[in-house]
Image 1 (cartoon, rainbow, N blue to C red):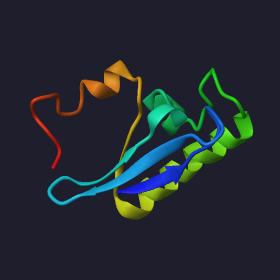
Image 2: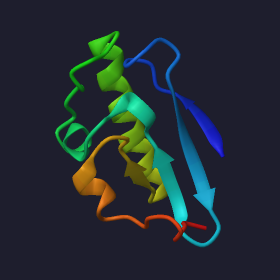
Image 3: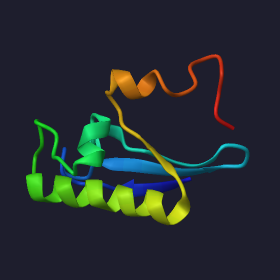
Length: 92
């Protein structure tokens, strides 16, 4: 697991990059991007401390996902969450 600094939503905000042995790499975005459209459209969420840093953080997460083959998990997207495993299922 790697902690990533993703300022923008708040100063010092952090996201996680996790290499799972069975499921592969995932990026847990936290509040750096709330919805999938923030990722796809490189659009800053509505409530941020610094919009410039927030956009930089979204681009950073996209680059990490592209280079590693990882999937970004946005934090608040109900449509996205319907597409992933739910408890008690798990990514391993």
